[in-house]
Amino acid sequence: MDFDLSEEQLMVRQMARDFAEKEIIPTARQLDREERFPWEILKKMAPLGFLGAGTSPKYGGMGLDWVSYCLLTEEVGRASFALRSIISAHMSLTAQTIEQWGTPEQKQKYLPPMCRGEMLGCFATTEPNIGSDVANIETAAVKDGSHWVLNGTKMFISNGGVAGVALVFAQTDKSKGYRGLTAFLVDKGTPGFTARDIHGKLGLRASNTAELVLEDCRVPQEAVLGNDVGGGFRMAMSAFDKARLCVASGCVGLAQACVDASVEYAKNRVQFGKPIGGHQLVQGIISDMILETEAARLLTFRAACEKNKGKPATIETSMAKYYSSEVAFRAANNAIQIHGGYGFIDEFPVERYLRDVRVATLLEGTSQIHKLIIGRDALGINAFS
Ligand SMILES: Cc1cc2nc3c(=O)[nH]c(=O)nc-3n(C[C@H](O)[C@H](O)[C@H](O)COP(=O)(O)OP(=O)(O)OC[C@H]3O[C@@H](n4cnc5c(N)ncnc54)[C@H](O)[C@@H]3O)c2cc1C
Image (cartoon, rainbow, N blue to C red; front, side, top):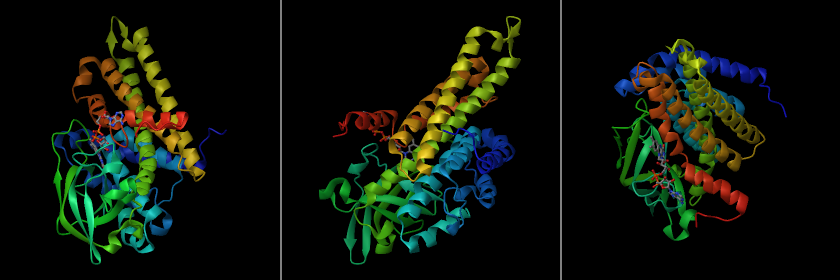
């Protein structure tokens, strides 16, 4: 077992950290206040290769190994969890799914502009009536000659209002259950396809979340991902295996930001004649935060190492995502506790950390869903059915 990072991995982390400190952290509060999508930052990230971090160099990406990819998303998550969600939807959910399952023509059409940041991607399984139960998606696609006609609504779609392409999951044969799901690449501007931004979010205000409406939306057969009618469920699960790791590492980054902010504050804030960090109960909170953050990081790296061996690492990834998201939420809550009243206002970043990370135990599988995935693996009993 080797816990050391390679030269290349250290370089990726340093590059991402430098970028985050120079370009992301200084504007994070303002973007959150103004609910403004960070186009300027994405434009600066693209030439560095960050928008194609997990995509193969053949299509203009960096082709990073999974540990490097986690280091990159950890640094982004430390700086802005909203930006992390944009990157995860674009890269892990959409680009990497196109690369794994797409036809050569689909990869050539979408991946180079996605790596260059000229086109963002989004991924749509969730619907108004269907969230965790992905197999029972209601959006329907009906064959009409050489085309498919899509009807349905997608809910809570990250990047939905700004993406150039949406990976939309629809039922092509309801009688087959999850084997009747198919993934479609729907381009922005396709007649019958509209996006409506969702406002009033608790957190991730500097990201875009939208409702997608498909009304008699006609797409050609070439829009079927991998030309594989009925292969959608497998594709969606493979996308979750990747994006969950991105959530896990982003949560490690956010938990680390909570630790750093709390240590700094506890060294400088004086009460009862000494820094609050000198009070044992405050030290106890910080020690627990550090321990949990480190444990979450190790679980995340373990899943990444398994993926580097070419395995999907579904269970390892599930454990990393479940644990890291709960840890990050606790860390953000504790960071506010340590900051006292100042933690409640946006003069300090910890209130944003809490609002932003609240979603992490919900998306890419809720904590309850991950318990059932881990439990199913241990017991051999499927609690979903
Ligand atoms: C900001 C944001 C961004 C998002 N981005 C995307 C995106 O890009 N693409 C996309 O497709 N979706 C996206 N989502 C949707 C997200 O993935 C869903 O919210 C999530 O899957 C949960 O679905 P739901 O909200 O319908 O909750 P439900 O599935 O209705 O769950 C509600 C509650 O019931 C519990 N529950 C459900 N089933 C079980 C069970 N079998 N056993 C025990 N408990 C259960 C859940 O754990 C939860 O506590 C996003 C959501 C948000 C808020």
